[in-house]
Image (cartoon, helix red, strand yellow):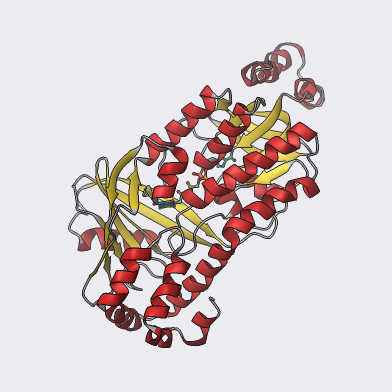
Length: 416
Ligand SMILES: Cc1cc2nc3c(=O)[nH]c(=O)nc-3n(C[C@H](O)[C@H](O)[C@H](O)COP(=O)(O)OP(=O)(O)OC[C@H]3O[C@@H](n4cnc5c(N)ncnc54)[C@H](O)[C@@H]3O)c2cc1C
């Protein structure tokens, strides 16, 4: 089996050749790519996040030669996630990185009283996200995949990937390429596939003080266009928010001050939440998955469940394409069809619901939450609340209390 390390050594050894034998670098540059024109791998996965690693594990288990290129020098850090997931994610991954689980969440409307939502069993699990990513990496390595750290993809040239490592440029070739390189995916950009409809900056602070439970804060003051949260963390609590007015950091500082924890911050983590439903996620020899393909729930920004569902479809079609030798965009389109069959409806409804939510003033949000306080509605939320499929819950709540329709008028009717 070829090793990426060997290829990397051969490629970089050109500099010794250049320095000692040829002063004319330009002339040499054109000769040195001899080592890259071999199909080193069956699959190159760009991005060592949980979604790329899931595909890597599945493809390696099927016996294919897989290499994961990760730009950071460590899997799992920096963290850009609160780690809040549904029981489905825990079941799908059989993860050992759960640090807490909850059957209750408290919603804090802008000015009216808080609303406690309670379910008969645990509906939200908190993951140690750094440990989770490492766990996914370990599994893919055990399955036979290789992971190249500190290796940043910068371009593609046909079926070759151009990368930067330690300041040196290199090229590597594979039969199939998977873009799992997150919200600002370079693979998406260089392939000419259209990107997210909207990118919400997400920012959070790890605070060295324990807090109780999961709390969601909404309102245009605290987190315009999104919401704020506090969730347990191994080091204490993570306080975070998304905001679409370009002032996310300022809002975070205000949030921390309002909770009197601004002097207990251990670290700040910032990332992006890509929203939209992409109408094309494949090309010849290429598939996009996870945040790179905007497979993120628009209401919560959660991308682990949706990304994992898509990762399994991606792995299935990848394996079929390598087994049949058909890597054409037409063949790979089957992946696009499968993930859209499972997720498109919910993502589209989530975008609609988000539009309605963003149109509310704080006063209207308070009124809406006051209206939700009815016992029957809380029972429905407790019974059917599902962080992966919030639109189904919205439908049940509206059936229980049709008067809620007045809050969003004709827009909400388009949801169903
Ligand atoms: C503040 C915040 C909080 C969040 N909280 C939650 C939550 O509670 N629950 C939830 O489900 N989701 C949450 N999310 C979303 C979740 O983090 C993502 O959906 C998830 O990480 C997607 O995984 P991924 O593997 O697709 O992408 P990523 O986790 O972003 O992984 C992509 C990887 O690709 C690497 N990469 C990028 N560019 C290159 C390149 N050019 N070359 C090589 N490697 C590259 C990156 O370094 C990264 O390791 C949150 C997001 C943010 C911003």
